[in-house]
Length: 463
Ligand SMILES: *Cc1c(COP(=O)(O)O)cnc(C)c1O
Image 1 (cartoon, rainbow, N blue to C red):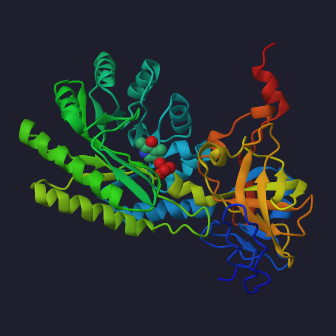
Image 2: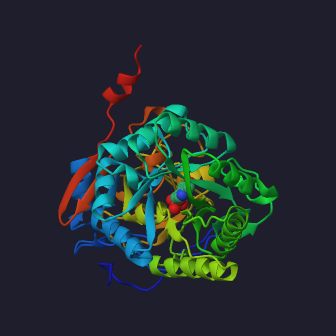
């Protein structure tokens, strides 16, 4: 499929010497399908369309900045994950990546389960009709009130994160007269980010209970001793934006070792393991994510092999992709405001949003790509930094990228792969109004989260 209205060969920029920026590998008019959602293309005039609707119309109707979410892509990714894992596994969408009631309904229609990690996420899920038994409740410091609501609602599982929480959940379940299904989150001494992982014996972080020093085995002992808890399995989540399956391999092996120890000590084979989320997506053309069926095969092969060698029945597997489902399905549309060429450095392109709608670049040096989307251009590429309008020099959306040198105020530019952890981490810094999320599908567009208004800000400011 050609996504360019003006296909042309690669061009080269005069790349500046600070840092090491490679010249753009491809025609800037070509939208790399790896980083854009599935229905994105350019129309005959060169403007980007999603779900059959052009960005000029979207900007006019919904304003900028705004997130446009490709609903059919979202649904296709849900189906790809659940088909890849099949009937003997469960796919939990990690709601923290992006959650609203429309998304909850799509998840239900596509047969997924849902992870929540706060009372607010739980309320959103229940309000949109997600059956409680399909919800897992996570978090390292769930409040008593949150645990009570989760138990009352009848959530399918609570993932226990500390020794204190084992007792807390048991007590609340007993006082409600229920036997709560729980998993224990363990830290397996694996930390994975993108292309590397580190396997260590110790974990210096706030989540989970360490396998090291027999801590996790002790947690299992305590949970099994409490009648109001039904321990259904062990949970491990090793990181984020992971491409290398080797980290999952070490994690699965260590979790299966624990299952074998539990069998030897208690005569119980725990029926489930959850390997968490963290699967990577393409933010730039340099990223090569795996397809869900490859991930499913790799994970189930690892677990099957480890269980065979430990003489265990293969447990039911669950996974928790957040970013890998919603991340690629949305882009943020901005209008270019001021353009500041800094001689010998780069050109600063300011947009009408910034760190309030995408904190990831400032927070952890995330990489993004960007494209001019209201038109194509035959101008030479120029090295740019896309920055926001906030009072903070770290307010960077895209650190290094190329845009056409004839970029002008009023042009629309878009940053792809902003579906995960952008709207959900958005803030009101500088009293910015958080942008809307607009679902686009088959020639129709509808707001699923509306833009904040100044009245919204003043409503909380009670004087
Ligand atoms: C954040 C998180 C996920 C989802 O991570 P992604 O990188 O979005 O796939 C899954 N499980 C747990 C426990 C998490 O904390």
